[in-house]
Amino acid sequence: MSAPDIRRVTNQAPPLAGHNVVTGDAALAAAVLCHADEETLESLATLGAEAGSAEAQEHGRLANRFHPELVPYDRYGNRVDEVTFHPSWHWLMEKAVGHGLAAAPWALAEKDSAEGEHAHVRRAAGFFAWSQTEPGHMCPISMTYAAVPALRASEPLAEQWVPRLASTTYDFGVRDPAEKLGALAGMGMTEKQGGSDVRQNITEAHPVDADVYELHGHKWFTSAPMNDVFLVLAQAPHGLTCFLLPRVLPSGERNRLDVVRLKDKLGNRSNASSELEFRGTTAYRLGEEGRGVRTIIDMVAATRLDCVLGSASLMRRAVAEAGWHVAHRSAFGGVLADKPLMQNVIADLAVESEAATALGMRLAAAVDRPDDEHERALRRIGLPLAKFWVCKRTPAMVAEALECLGGNGYVEDSVMPLLFRESPLNSVWEGSGNVNALDVLRAIQREPEVLDAWITEVGRAKGADKRYDRAVDTTLALLGESMASPEELERSARRLAGSMATLLQGSLLIQNSPDEVADIFCASRLGGHGGTYGMLSGGDQRAVLDRATPSP
Image 1 (cartoon, rainbow, N blue to C red):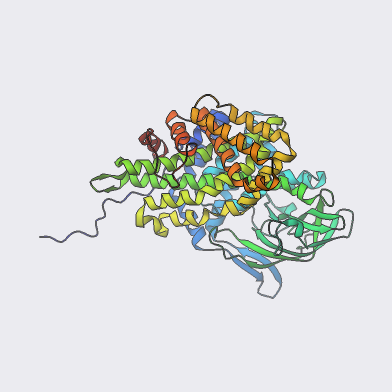
Image 2 (image 1 turned 135 degrees about the horizontal axis):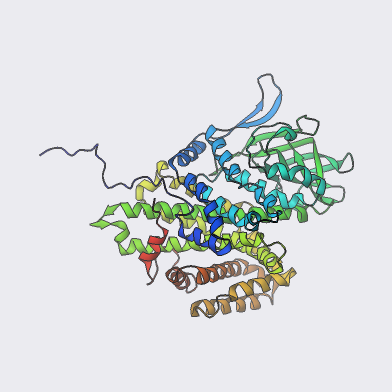
């Protein structure tokens, strides 16, 4: 008997590479066509092909293997506070900026042209797709996008900085921004003693000129310290205020910005997150003194949208890898994708992914209509709802997808561990689950129009599915009962937020997705989910699995 040829590998799934992450994603393509048009979808084809390439995947792997390093001093002992990155990080950043995923949509939207009509939907789809190459580098991309709404609080600062942030040229390095071809923005809100409760901030801002201040204090968590400009909060004479803090001053001199250390994080390791200290650091007031939260909240809202899109992107990459694996792996007498129980699991994951994609893209479409009262109100309540729900459900979803690959999924080469480490992140950043659930209640109590917007949005699907109709009535009854007691209202915040977010997803799937997707969603999410994935009862699970599986 001859010995087995152990060098010959069989029954292993080939690498998932060479597919188009945009046009090959039926759920994403459908969402783009729903909120934009065929031309918008076609404009993303090149990005989608690059995102699905083996080259992009290798750059993503290298950017996470070789982490950023802090260089506090140069060889002569001069304080420089710089961070070095692997070349693959710069490759990914150059592509992301070049595809217009930073602040370019704001500039396009101001133009009276077809190109600007769907600028934010196009950018959201691109952000969703490109994040699948490597999620960490999308943090500075997101903050640059989100800075623009807050910068509008000061016309002079906006005129100076928005064109730089809207550039599609990546120009790395601490240099005079007037000499750079493009710029990136960051944000510093939290401090050691307060965290999300930014009103406890102790960093002080002392006025030295009209709108010029000196900052003394610290920031506990500031990502991308190599970016060109930051929006930060500090206590001015009349209260908490928002400031613009550049790395390099108009004189060409470096601003006093000490990077104390880089955070050693669970995931997101390609991205540098830092602790900063200010000692006479120059900053420029953005908005009125004492209105810092009101000023920077527009930036927070935009980053929350990206948290939703980023988590939805993780879900999509996870289910794509799982679906691809089971389509090419045989066990126990047949291909895994043909096994009824595996179909149940993947279909369940696919529905979760499509619901997250649909909701994220719907909220991006609302950004494209800033003058529409309904869209503004929907964005106000929809963002904390989606941030709470989509980001909260991502870790369990990614873990289940990882398990579909078995032991292979627990090995770094499979990319699944990277996705799993990243999966809790968006639920923590820009307000944890409780912060967003309470923000939903705050919006309902202070702005009655936001509840009207939610009712209108979920009402669009009323009458199409009895399970959905019952869930809407149950949620409205729960809201009415909870409103009678402030304590009970807060205690029910998560339950309410989860129900309201699920119904937004259900409305979108009923209206825009294939019947088999909406049917499984309503049966499993509105009729009592089993607590784990793969416990669906009925439905065309094979059709849903096939819809979610990439086809190069």
